[in-house]
Amino acid sequence: MTLTAQRSLFMAFLRIGLLGFGGGPAMIPLVHQEVVKRYHWLEEEEFADILAIANTLPGPIATKMPGYIGYRVGGILGSINAVLAVILPMILAMILLLGLFSRYRDIGWIHGMGQAVVPVVMVMMAQLTWDFWSKSRSTLGWMISLGMIIVTGGLIYGLGVHPALVVGVLLATALALPVSALRKKEA
Image 1: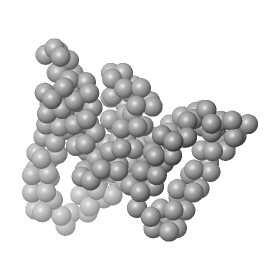
Image 2: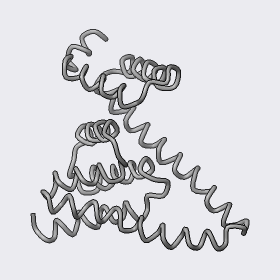
Image 3: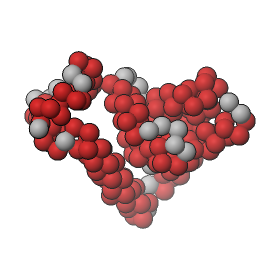
Image 4: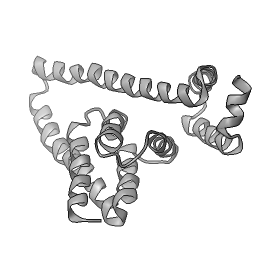
């Protein structure tokens, strides 16, 4: 991989690290924007697969996704490059902001500023959810997609099943039952 490509990889994940307020899940739409839409390093389906697998593995998603995507795009150096790019802003920001917050936490506007980030992250997650719904609906059909949402939501929120187990079962099912078989059942 060329130096220019490594620089693009670094800059993409540096932007994600700088703008990814709210932790790993809040970074997912930013990763999607950079990796799928801006640089076209991955297709939608590949991104969805990487996201699903990253959610099943232990550890923070904010480093798992850059690590794998960096490796995929630029090998071992790309993996190191992407992970460093995404964590450096977090490390520096934590040191700086936690120091400032500790010193000025009693000021009202600082407290309000932290609360104002929540709706922005919510909108970003809603957009990503809509994108995944549209993709699922176009590949599996709306009935199967809606059924999967209801069943997985019931398992996770109703019965308390860990999301990693649900994703693992869905991945195993997808391997065992091709999409064409699911479409035939819906028709």
